Length: 474
Image 1: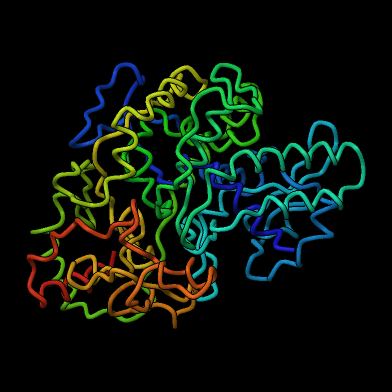
Image 2: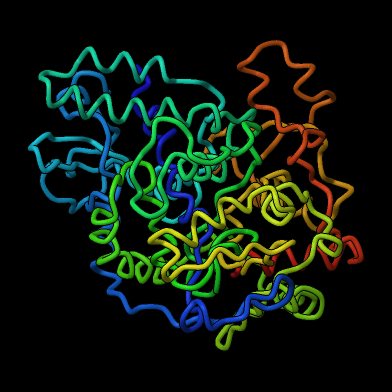
């Protein structure tokens, strides 16, 4: 039974973790939020990164899930590489993306944690903070969720399983993607908001406001190690103000009252502090340092104005670039700025989250810092470009492509910097079956365009080669 896949469907309720940031401004209502240009710094509540690591792995910020008795009967034994040493109690036997939680009524549950989306593997090693680009949201697994109910052992467990399964059934229509690796976090969060009272957070089986469209706007999961430099959450900077409070959208799936999220708020600043402490993994292959130094010169001349500088005295401008200038797929940014989603902004402002955090989407995208960029393929906010080589030369971007969805060193291209891929002659319409179809990235679909960010086209081939070598060192 594909138990682990069921849980990965749930975790993207943690939308506030999809793009992390740190160091922002004073009280939310005293700061001006410009739609285009630099995002201002907002001071954050202090946190302890050590406590944050423990909370991230062991605290029940997701408070509904599968009874442990059903888990034991339906889940396969975890692979050794999925276990994190040092986790206490029941968590020691659970894979990295699951956490044990005992409810106030004494029911032991297995629940998701943020690592379902925000940890990935490279060459057999778990990398905490790396976006998981291999999640499969293409299938409706509510039937499997329902079948797990046959394994619960008593009435109390049945009630907890029913609560979890009903929530999953409610949001499933808004989370079905068409391609493996596409993350539907935006739709999931708005679907959850539509079913919650903004002031009490009480759950309603029927939507209280108009839910989001069922067509998923794809996003790629960015790495957590950008936290230390960024001043706002999300690709379009809609999460501003107190970022720890904004991250608590993690609780939207299960928290049915404000008291529950208040408890989470006591350690949310610690989790934010931990995210800000994460360092990217070092490039594992060789570097031509002379060529990399040439690339640094080219990069600082042509790229640093948006992406910052690196080294002993790094800088990062937190710059939002307008859609007309960046030219990348506009669907995500436009949805939040064309008036269609105003109801979600109004909900947020009325909620506990809006007391400190601010919903301020921009009509563009923020240029990210590039620390550890080599391991974060595919590229652009929708994951439409498989390698950095193709990102710097738009003529090399495949219209239709697929990849192995493996994470070994053999699956990685150390020359082009990204996952090895196969260019295809046809898109999804030419697929022979559903299994093949969901592995095809089709850039002709709405929201999936690989256009824009053509700034590298003006570089010579030698300059692009040098920049690629330099990016290995970040």
